[in-house]
Length: 604
Image 1: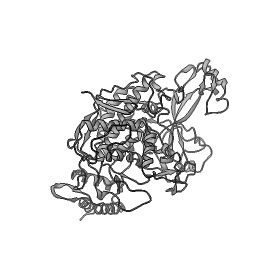
Image 2: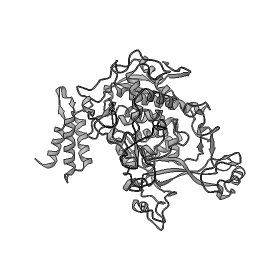
Image 3: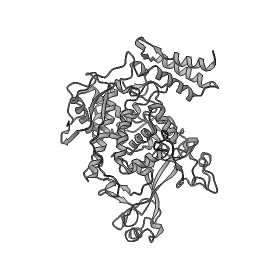
Image 4: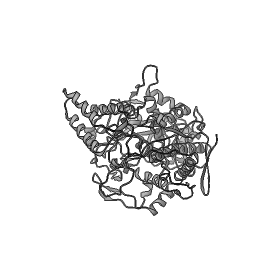
């Protein structure tokens, strides 16, 4: 038999068929498949990527949809149950620290390992851990995405299970260039969020100050996978509502109004408030991973019912636009348009250096609300820098004007190749001033002087002292996978962005080797790439990726029109939509808050 035909036969044989044509995966089948994959990848005729693609094609032909005899099929959800769970989640999102601490009082301590080595081995101190793991809305949306990643063999999807590889690590953030290069994401820091959902799943009365269910979701036959999807949708709805509250000057739950809303302080061509009159469906019928797919051996952390023994296929955060688009196409069947739309979820949430080695926020001071600020940053729209406070501070150009913006690339010099590489959003701006009192924390002494506050208050751009008007990047960042939606560049060792003007200098080339060796002549702090735009699209007559980014930056409703369907499609990964049931539409949902929690109702 020819080699390639034999290998394809092996791929087919790795699927064990049961009655009715349903594909059933056992641990033995998985181990055999892994061995075959390694053997195929070692063949000169096959690369691992080609093998995985062949496996995915074969799985697709077999209509492998997580259907095994032991998988739990979710029973129907009543509207009353959905509304109670949404009210519970609203309370969690509004009080993440309170709920998190209450959970820790009545449950085993949260596991954590830290240290200079990799993987870290030293137990973390309990003090302050809640700040890292608190169950914020953004983490529930992240959990929804990670749950719906398929496994490396192409099977799976949204199944209420996670790989625990790297789950409880806290990394040393010192500049050591000793950590492994960051080439894929992982599920680190999601266990606590899933633990909170497990309490909602198995109990009727968790959390306190929220309505109770008549019967637990577990007892009534619901699947974790459906609950996790509902949590992601509710996190989206909650964060849009928070956006609209901030637009009206109301206090949000996350910051109590200390961060305000950027769009109240800059002109935009679209309304600040997002029209909530849209359909966002909660589909049910997802199945949880089977007991065979969960690890049994003991380890240093406690096993969870939702832990998977297999690894998901994760994206590369250092991937450029082509790689990011290909990932979503191959693993979620997304178009380029859907890819650009779903990435807007990054407006919500922050990086955690100890969790991922990446730092700061995608949208500084605005990371608790969901809107199109993410796209405005990508296209370098004029803006103002946000600083939370009482009152919040908005810093731009002279006489309150908007500041031109742009991007630097900086190697954080933590990994062995000088990475991770992070894009820093800069503002050509004045210093932060309270009245004419300078409270700036960046720049040199002159930029921090009260003289510059006087200059910015009275002078125009053409007449202001140049020392008082500078490009300043502070705590607002993005990944290659973000900027790659808009800009065309290649990536090299360790994720270093390449192929754009402005990175190399007359004295040194911009390479990972030169960065690792600290070569003089390279600007590690203010390298400003000048890249062409990303013109990848879905075919003739469709908008290119850069055009979609620009469209979403200029039209918030256009983004919402594409984001919600993409989110629903993401949360159905691994299933045919016709096999899921539309059980609840968020359109008309209203959650009112009082001292005792939230009461959620639905208008028809």
